[in-house]
Image (cartoon, rainbow, N blue to C red):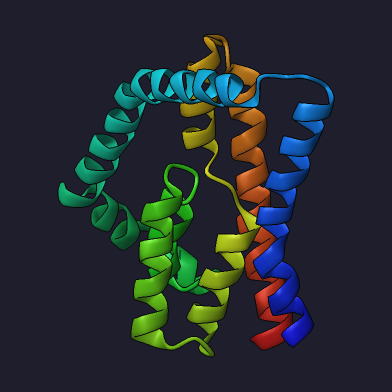
Length: 176
């Protein structure tokens, strides 16, 4: 364990030193390139800001309006019939939109039901088996100016659905 701690403590500083030595060896103006990259990073952050605000507002409206709770109440009998706890559905619906909101929901589920409960294990597995598809498409595609994303959206959401279904099956088989 001490070796891993030592390696992790020296890894990033060593990488930075290697980059600087290579820059000097190749006669690349490292500081100027660093500043140039910083400027591009700030410009990128400002260009992404409207997309981030839109995602945050959409998530807030979904949760605050009660639409999510109404949908869960509507489909609860079916979910219970097939063995899926209804408490997990908000996580399954929010995970493709926002990783931070999904992590908050996972933390809440684990806090309420416990980390070793079926719901806690399912939430954790679902968190690791799905991606923030809409966030990725909005931010990354928006940053590079891609406007036609319908196939990426379909494939990403299909992958999320498969991840959710696989999570339920795996956790049910292992811990159910």
